[in-house]
Image (cartoon, rainbow, N blue to C red; front, side):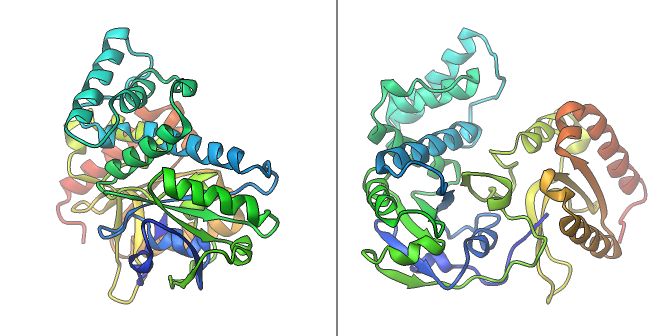
Length: 345
């Protein structure tokens, strides 16, 4: 479970076409304040530079572009409405995915061959043949697809630069990405303070309480907030549960990655799955929830939700992946029980 802070809009003062340094808020605070992605924000994605990575700008560019490409493939169902995920599909179905993508490109700014390759990769479960496209095409195409998946026109790439990283090679890569991915590139992290060739802007975001798991904790090296109403594209358990629930009529009325507030002064929570009327919440826990502090924080929040009439069901990633039908059966029993009793408040 994650929270969504009171203060938002730090992105509103930042350029979408230049490299800019951010000061005044940590990367975790920035990530959490944009979860789920607010309606007025660009498609914000975070990339954490590996301290042990090569110090060649071209290598960093390739790592970022490959990560953007993977995210674009994971998000295919969001930017290509006709797409239905079924890895291992037949040649005919893979061709259908390509055809739908080419048709989309005909009425948009997408580059047809590349967007078709993304769709085919999503359908087949196989990686794109990267040698077919230039890195410039891949950068612009994947960023455009991600923006479309979020219903936005542009992507903003937040590069998290650790202290130990050489600022010069990151600076060169940032300028390249800004120019060729056609994205605003915003620098944060201890290492960004040494990149004084770029202007800095002071931003503010709410503090993140100890124990809260942000998207930066869950996904690396590329992290991005979920789209309200949808499972996170990078979370296989969330997508697996979504598809399993979608097969059942009783599961209608649910919401994915939605914020709820327990009181006017309380901090909002973002929950994985919510039946708002029945007040049933489903959370899918990754390995980070095993840590003692995080486990305790989860219990505190569960207690707060329960005192306000919510039933909280928790499943591990493995439980959802290995036996989604059992998870669905448990959820159905809870939702049905709430419905049979009427308004649970």
